Image (cartoon, each protein chain N blue to C red):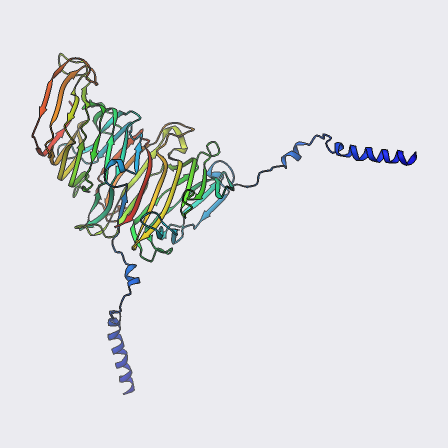
Length: 319
Length: 300
């Protein structure tokens, strides 16, 4: 009898134990806070303004920067490279990172994509010189095809300037339809901001054209944008959405770049403030990159209320 | 004797050294491939017709665009501006870009010019309203009356449809102002019936309400071309709060291919030329007209 009683108790214990593990116990909030199932990286660079950015990058200009594609595109199927060479900047040039970046990589089927929640970045090149080059090798020195030169006295572009209220996101992959090399980027809520500061920008050509074969420069002298709705943070916004792709290839020694633009709205209406920037664009040509040669302006173009949207593709080569 | 010999060797070395740098070396094909002297950009936007265009621009209408000249021209030597204000268009307006654009900038004896190999454009404004103005400031907001208002129901213009046009752009030799040398540049107006009107908000003595003049269902029998060559220059200046624009026309040939044009002329109280005030219909066959010269434009 005693043996039967012990067996009965043991049997009950085994039967009840699984149900004991289902007993509900309240979990405190501080324990819940520590539970996040999703993997990925979030990096915070401080507050919501570049004045509260926690990362400062200086001396960031490389001497050569290039991007290569191993199999190009239709008509230019050998490897090609595009980039900047002979880059110089003043020591005052810097980049300030602020707001938050998130980083995730995922696959669906056999396609993997990188998903970036953009941080905000104030990119501030000063006294920039660079040559824009297509080439067949990464150093841009082999079969170099110079498109022209770039110069600015000062410049600033703010990437993702409206974060965290409007946060930009880029998803990056190689070509998914053809499984070939080449970068595809899908944009969501991505904005660039050009602050309201008078700047000189020029494009140079070392050898001109027939009859005008010495170096010449064209550009804007004291280009200025102003959106009065935005107060002290006045800027011109450029919005990017949809998908873009970039391929570079070579055929018979000629390198070409094929660009599919994202849907790009220049001088987009400011989401948080309203309105677009008024643009003052003094048009200049000259024989010095900074237009300091004393040649008069062509004139000044002034534009209000213009917010064009551009979409499509083009192929760029040198000649 | 040894010192003389040493000095002689040094003298010979110094004499010969510069010539060593001129010694000729065979350059390999690989090295030659690395040499491309010419800088310049070519952008291709698809080839042939606008149906092959790879780039489209929408929502391209500004509310105001103006062009300013700081030192005007003789008689109007203060700054002046020309432009359009109050611009609106329908959302279906667009621009298609096709063929190739080339960009070069060069200098000769301190004069710099921009050389553009034009792409082709199909510019398509729809239900356009604008006010054409001169002014003493970039906002065109001073008290000078407007030159006129402009309206079209739909319109299309092909810029450089053959893809062979070229513009060379510079300022005047010693003053601000725009000079554009044109070569092989043409515009094409497709054969599509369009309404175009210009308006005057205050009329004239006895007829002081707004009035409009234009063509209703202007139609060419085929694409109407206008070709340009030689030099265009534009200056805008002010004197005593009056702004004027001086235009030196390029040599302009209207209708070189001699299409037939039907132009029903209408006066109306509305920009859309509604009503029955039709003057009649102008029919033009077999004309090719060349314009050249200059003019000044100012408000009254």
